[in-house]
Each structure stands twice: as structure tokens, then as C-alpha cells.
Image 1 (cartoon, rainbow, N blue to C red):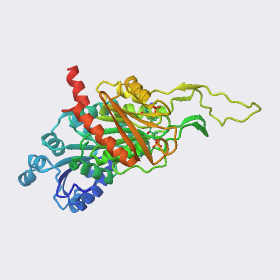
Image 2 (image 1 turned 135 degrees about the vertical axis):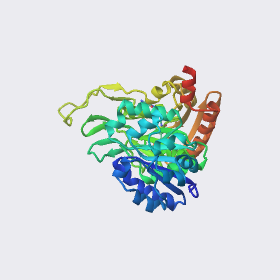
Image 3 (image 1 turned 45 degrees about the horizontal axis):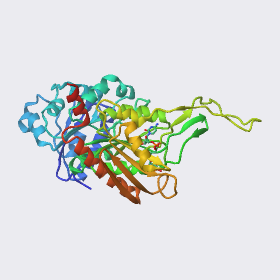
Image 4 (image 1 turned 90 degrees about the horizontal axis):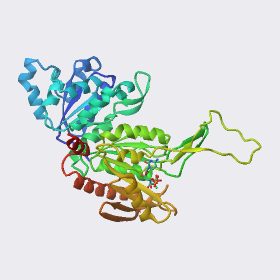
Length: 415
Ligand code: PMT
């Protein structure tokens, strides 16, 4: 799908090492037929030259707010009006802070303030700066104001550390921009999904886990992107490729998955819990491999893992929450009970006792239950079921939040 043809994209570049990726993004946008104008902050020009961006965009690069010549040609207000969408990539912690404050002290910040078109930021920074409460607060504020926050990805950083803070790859940013114009059922919505199993360590070489392959959750992530959503997928260990356009965060065990989800959930419009999270983990994790000895039995003491889904559903301003229920008997009764017990908007129940459905199969069948309604999605490939389920979620979300988002509603209630 290419919805970028003839679209006017204003790309803001701020001063971080990831600024070099902006060059590739400009090239790819033009390949897709978009018109691109680039605005750089002063710090960005220390990392990549305006000349490079000018050559790639085929347009003069804008750098100064108080440049009389530039203002005469296309001033900050004209630039803000010209764009169909504004993307700031990379967006540094400093730029996010200035944006949150509504400052107008350079060209990029000023036109972000002046624009009425969709505004997205793709953060890139050191992982400690990303997790700092000041940055978290700024992002939460921006998200409440409707700014889309794309990424960051997780991994090795230029500073030598590892963690969240890498700029999303140009190809992913391209898909996000495309999604803005796709006008799908979830266009502009932020969807958080868990998928796959968790592994609960017993010792350095052994773990407790289950048979979830991640196929159902990954299919839902792909279907949500197709529907125009911005998707974060928190995945347990699986052997699947991340669907294009999805931000993937990896979690080995339930506690890591819980922490990642808790961090992202306040910004999500919809949360879909497909993961088969281990209910229990060993109370003690042996630091060395447990040796066999003469004993014929080994006793492990287990303790309860936190319920990730129930915790999200209990958040103030919680996203629209969708749970899965994996059942081997009395499916409808158990699923309804889980929906009420965890405070869910929708539960999708599947049989997991028989081969060919549920865990680690390409097909599945779902029974959906929500307040005042239910629907059966008969056996089909998980990819098809995922599209149908995303369509139903979009409809129910729209009915529940005809205007605004869960966060807006919460803010209005508590005002
Ligand atoms: O991954 P596949 O091989 O494609 O298989 C798909 C699936 C069978 C795993 C999937 O369709 C499914 O049913 N996922 C939920 C499995 C499960 O753990 O169900 P549950 O009934 O135990 O949990 C109910 C809900 O609470 C689930 O949404 C689960 O993600 C969530 N949960 C459970 C425990 C916990 N500690 N935290 C949670 O968030």
C-alpha cells in the first residue's frame, strides 16, 4: 500500500547521532512520491549537513526562524500550512521538552506549534534519558495533546549502552507515515499488544514455559498496522519476524513483560493481551546449574506472577482492554468470568485442548464476549481471524469513545 504519493511531508531533524538516518528517510519518501521539506535545528547541523538533505529532498533546507530571505520565500507559518503531516525524527529529549512547553524559540518548535496537521515525533536518545521521569512526563503530556510518539526501538546505542532509545528504522517510519494517510479503522490509534510465551528461569539453563508460538499476537499486530494503527508489540521468545511497521520490544519473562507493558500502557488507546504469560515463576532462581543427585524427585517452589492484563485494566484512564482466554472446558462460562474479574472490554476465548487450534497452530477459532454482546469467529487462519477481530475491536472502541481517547475521558472526569 502506498498512500504517500503526492503527500507533503515536513521532516524536522534535531541534534542526535541518529540524524544520519533522516537522509535515508528523505530518499525513501521521495521514492514513494512524497514531497519533502526539511527543517533542521542548529544542533542537527552538527551531525548532518543541510546540503545532504537539500540534495536528497530537492528543496532548500530551512534552518532559521529569523532569516529574512527564507521567510520571504516560505516563512514558518507557510511551512506549517504547506505540510500534510509533520514528523520530527530524530526527536531529542531536549526537543520533546521544548515541544511539551509549547516554546517557539527556533524554526522547528515554532512550526510544530503553528501546524494543524498530524504531528509525530520519533524519539532517539540515551536509554537513561528516555526512562527519566522528566522525559516520561513530557511524552505523556504530548500524547494527551494528540502528538503521535513513534518508537523508540530497543537495542545497542551509539553511547555504548543497551536499552530503549534507538530511532525507529526509516522503513518503519515510512510505514507509520503511510498509515497516517491510510484512513483505516484504527488510523491514528495507539495499540499495545503482548504475544508469545514467557520463560521463567529455574537455573541458568532451564526454564518453565508453554507452547505459545506468538502467531496469534503477531497476526494481530500486522492487522492493526494494516488498519492504520501505531503498534507496539511486547513479545516473549518466539521464532517469528516482526511484522513491518510494528515496534517490537522483547521480554523473556513475565516480570519483564509486566514492566514493559506498564511503561507503555498509559499512552495506549487499545491493549490486546494475547501472550500466554506464565502464572507462576520459581521463587528461587539457582545461580548455577542444578545438579542431579541421588534423589528421584525435585521440588520447585513457585510464586504468582503479576497479572499484566488486570493491572492495565485497573489503570486510571485505562486503554480499551482486550483479553484472551485459553480454555480446555466450559469455554463461555470461564471466558465471561475472566472478562468480569479482570475488568475487560472484550474477551476472545479459544479452545487450547485440541490439536489444530489455539497454541502453535496456523488456524484458530474465537468466541468473543463483551458487555451486552457476543460473536463467534469460526475456524480460519490466524491472519484472517486477526483482521476480523481488529475490525470488531475498532467498532467497539468507536462506540465506547465516539470522541477523544480513554485518557481524554479520564482527564475530563477528574477535572
Ligand atoms: O501464540 P499462539 O501459538 O498463536 O497461540 C495463541 C494463544 C492460544 C496463546 C492465544 O490465542 C491465547 O489464548 N492467549 C492467552 C493465553 C492465556 O494465558 O490465557 P489465560 O486464560 O491464562 O489468561 C487470560 C488473559 O490474561 C490473557 O489475555 C493473558 O494474556 C492475560 N494474562 C494472564 C496471566 C498474567 N500473569 N498476565 C496476563 O496478562
